[in-house]
Length: 187
Image (cartoon, rainbow, N blue to C red; front, side, top):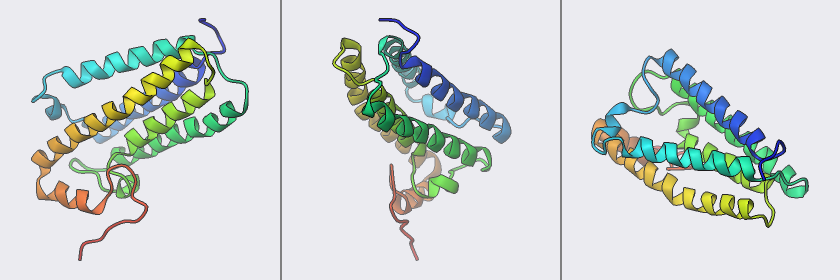
């Protein structure tokens, strides 16, 4: 049921904060975080799919009630940490010249923004966990989002490899796709 104490009260401010930070970073850096050249080969498919994904997620969050138990308190720090990871990644982008970003959090993950969104969504799922139809829809959505994110990452990495060549390949060899517990150094 649509209500005030549903997941949207966490999702919208969290995701909105990330989007506002991205707008700020784009202005500071002078070019968008998401390279428009990446979409030339696939037209507008990826941005349209992303907007549909986001619209469905917002809809589900409007109808999924908050869990008031232990899972809410486990999900809350995951949600918050997901936002913080995104903000740190965006800050790193804002202070990096054009090209491959290998500084800051990008030394430990080639895709920290996806890691942050994953944590945010996991937190949201836990914060709204119940046996309700909407909670089950959210869980299904979360599970489907994992291969969708991975597919998007593979698309972006193929584009960056074509665009930056050996520079990006070297970065791929040194840094894990999602999380590097240790950095690999080439002599």
